[in-house]
Amino acid sequence: MPIVIQKYGGSSVANARRIKNVARRIVKTAKSGHQVVVVVSAMADTTDELLTLAGQITANPPRRELDMLLTAGERISMSLLSMAIHDLGGQAISFTGSQVGIITDSSHNRARILEIKADRLRESLKAGKIAIVAGFQGVSLAKEITTLGRGGSDTTAVALAVTLGARSCQIYSDVEGVYSADPRIVRQAKKLPIISFDEMEEMAAFGAQVLHVRAVELASKYGMSIDCRSSFTNHPGTIVGKGSKMERVTVRSIVHDKSLAMVTVKLPAARSSAMPQLLTRMAEAGIQVKSFFHGQAQEGKLSLFFILDEADLSGAKAVIEKSTKTSGPVQYRINRDIGAVSLIGSGVGGETAILSRMLKTLAGKKVHVQAMATSHTRISCFVLRRDLEKALLALHLAFIG
Image 1: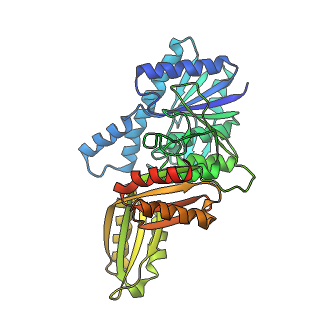
Image 2: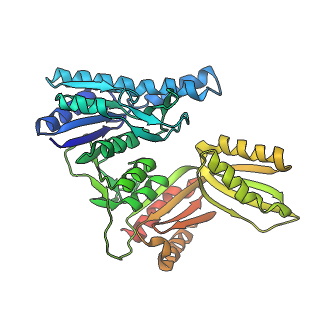
Image 3: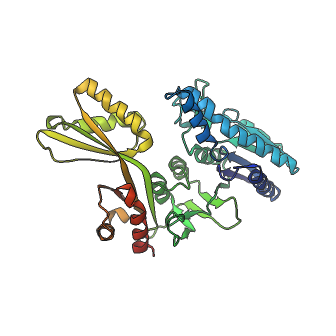
């Protein structure tokens, strides 16, 4: 029988009623002639509550112990869901990430999957059982419990789909698919029936919260299409897969990210080579820099600008301060009032007309662009957070309608 992977997010298993609804969907899938592997996230808000609790104990919890704490959320979901399936007459068995052989590196809180030894899963499926797997977690080669970082359950689902040769990888959440903009802000947002891996990867990296960027990267690498659906309806979702071979350049979606920060580093102009050095050190620390540039030297000082996720600020500060100790004094300041609005679509980054129209639209709404970044499938403008919603609405009207 073909294997189907279903992943359910925190909102889908937020309470007993929703867990029972999910169980009914899973049992129905199994009865339709599929072997089913289910990946679950922690119940809604559980991870945040555990992080808050850790913060009440210490301002700097050890990363190993934080992993031990946070993996409890998914274990609660998986066992409750297994109970719900049993109550419906189905056969289910729940597993932690380590029990199904998800082997990771040793990077606590942001581990990467090295391999999956899925023999135990295959045996369970062969025995006619529905396998429930705790997402977001694994075990390192040093036999330490690890987590994959926020949103890691998506990555767990895709990795299992690839390993097991699944026919389908279905990601269920509280939205019906991928939209042309955040439908909570833009009422005219349109659901996209299909979107390419490249486009989805850029959307995930720059604010869309439907899928985690690492899951999309993995799916793209192995050609595993993803079906994004809602756990609350039976409507068709969005297929994330291979893009069109045609050359038509179209803005498919407009995404925004309000969780960014800008770090400005000032140093003697003679030390202009510090930018690549800082970038290298940030990359080594696992910090993704969204954009970087430098200003003109003034009064013998050069300003370097780095835009990154606000969650990475503490790590970036540590890198800068370490650089100060080894290479001489460096001044820096942090601006947390930064967000990004991005046009997504294959080829848009190379279209001058699209860039010009974007800048003209923002200028017409008196939105000041602090910085820009482009790729083949994306144009991003970094603006003040208070201007994000205004920019999103204006650009959606201008490019999508």
